[in-house]
Length: 204
Image (cartoon, rainbow, N blue to C red):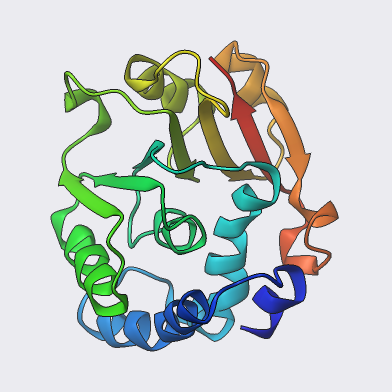
């Protein structure tokens, strides 16, 4: 939690309590359903919560916006973002139902009212649009954009696909045909873990 508070200083008491409860809940659920690498639990707040909140350093999600977390796994970046933006609606989607069980239980335990889930693949969602799609290290950018584009509203601010990715992205970006805006997370959070980790936005 110290690392979170090093970079974010305006949390309410409710938000601090919700964030503070996350590690215990995920540790408990991880014993039953492996949603986070065991070695990552020692650095839970840096590797998962702070990483997710990199999005919040560059983008403001306003009340009433609808955000989809594509391939949310155990709830990242969706759960930390839902805590950060309590008046924004987050719809967390994954093809593995047991991971969504963890998301639902964690959200209920900390009193998050702005999270919904759906057990499906993104391409199966019909007749619904979102202001933004967020995702973390789920698939190549080309696929993420292919899945996201039909689900995105036009005219939202911010808009499009916002994703957290790592490594050498040159080939992946070239193959996607996209021209994303790119932020180096290492310059946002100055810790070694974020070296070669990036935040990308493909606007629509």
